[in-house]
Length: 93
Image 1: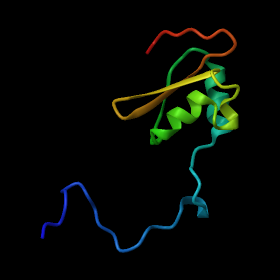
Image 2 (image 1 turned 90 degrees about the vertical axis):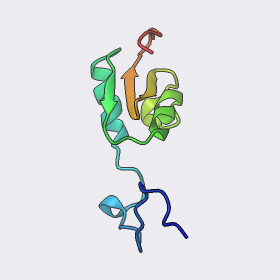
Image 3 (image 1 turned 120 degrees about the vertical axis):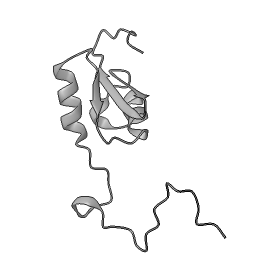
Image 4 (image 1 turned 90 degrees about the horizontal axis):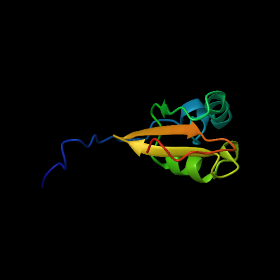
């Protein structure tokens, strides 16, 4: 029997959730506010899960509403986002 792929790391127990809670560690209000400060400019969100790109892009998190006012994509395993504002332009993909 093989141990599995080399990149797997086996653990006996899960570590405790960060900050004592299981929710994500991103301050969505702060991220949205920072993006609004520089409309149209892309920002890389370090350590963000890929699912955050969809949450931002589709406005499924309240901080990124109305849907379409923010844009997010995954490039080379990193999440990039920008505030598009009231007059979005579709460049920079």
